[in-house]
Amino acid sequence: MAGRKTKSGGGPAAPEASQEADGKIRLDKWLFYARFFKTRVIASAMITKGRLRLNDQRQSKPGHSIGPGDVLTFPTGRQTRVIRVVGLNDRRGPAAEAQAMYTDLDPPIETATASPLE
Image 1 (tube, helix red, strand yellow):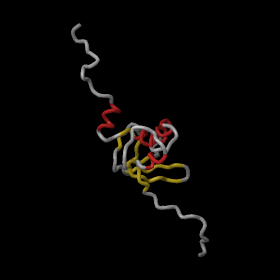
Image 2 (tube, rainbow, N blue to C red; image 1 turned 90 degrees about the vertical axis):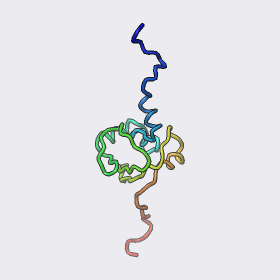
Image 3 (tube, rainbow, N blue to C red; image 1 turned 90 degrees about the horizontal axis):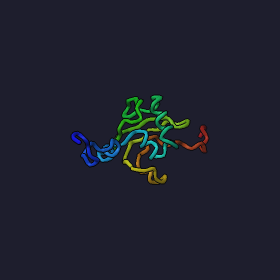
Image 4 (tube, rainbow, N blue to C red; image 1 turned 45 degrees about the vertical axis):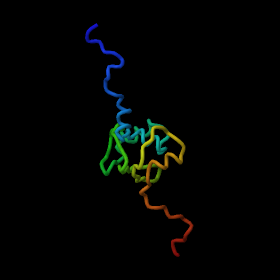
């Protein structure tokens, strides 16, 4: 059977495995793992609509690779989030683990307890 490939033929690795080994991960996956969106489908839809900026450039492909040091800007509810990617993860873990994946670059929100006249 000439020309037949074997299972251990040494073909290319799976795309997602090579991205994670390279220090990169899909944008929609990272947003889901970092718990900014409940599902990857919701994260993908937001990216496809052009509502996310990666390093000040609008992105429309959920499969775009990101890594540590990248800055993301996107809306969540009534707030616009500006975050810096600090780390990657291979799963959607607990909230504390997710918060360790990014640094929030937004200025702290002032509380409404103080009177504007003071």
